[in-house]
Length: 418
Image (tube, rainbow, N blue to C red; front, side):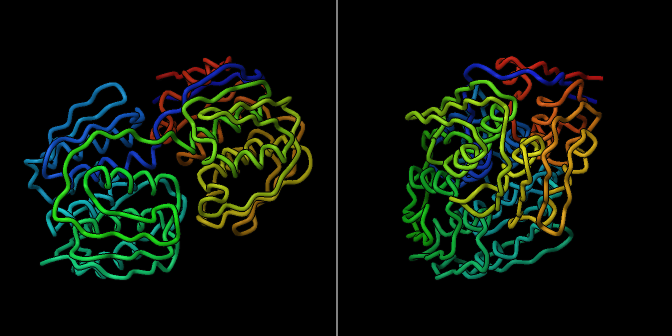
């Protein structure tokens, strides 16, 4: 069993390069199987377990997959298998993008229901609503989603709730539907735009990604292309928060500062200096922070995926901080771990109330999910003494070589394999 061991209290200094976006990559990779002509070469791919998992799934479906350094080449021209029912499919959330991709190309699919982090109920009802509106018949049998359609026909679809997954999945399915599909009340996250841009590079006709309404004019087929994934907004936000919490000066390169505006605004409110460049951002902090209030909302609001890392920082910010989690109902499990380190936190429904303490102290803790794991790393970096973090397989799903990056910034952090 692997664990991270951190001796905290060191300020962070230096430069680090941010990887390609996990949330974009795990949708773009399934979308490559929609190409019936040519190969897809995807660059700036993060070296994370969720990507490794999708590589295996796509290969098992029958595509040729070649993996290089931060690059994946996928040739799906001879792919004919439309059934994805494996342990890899069941253990990750993003495997549901296979539904929309297979349905678009083959008009049928059988895909096991997805897994992922235990952060609350994450139904796929909006995905199913969209597929059915396009003309597919949807059944769930023996733990798998079964999709069949004689033909897909464009439709007007209004999502009941803003959902990144449903927006991307139905957008993919609509790319090869007959006529025009209009999607309303859609997610506007940067990775939604990135997937739309990728599909357009393959030959799709998608307009409006990044706004409230996306229009998709169906095409008969898609072809392979070369594409580079956008920088990871969430990884960048995590390192911004770590630098703010530990003190010091850290410059992040390969970022899109506009994607980070909601995070930057809260760090500035907490007393941190944030300097933006064209594709870089520098955090300067004394480590003396003020409490702030946060409410997670869909983009361009404060990202739910950064809420947990931010809460670790706010544990040592002076005064009271109130965090309202409006996206997921079970995203405060990490606070019980932070309490082991001396945090003062109380949860009331979807609201967490944090009273800043003078210091955290090292303890043996666990990562309860992906972003909670990042929160525990930040807590370990600012804590007095040694912190051991278990269940770090969650962290590896979304942060490539996190200990190496923090070592580069001067942190005392090591991965130990028992």
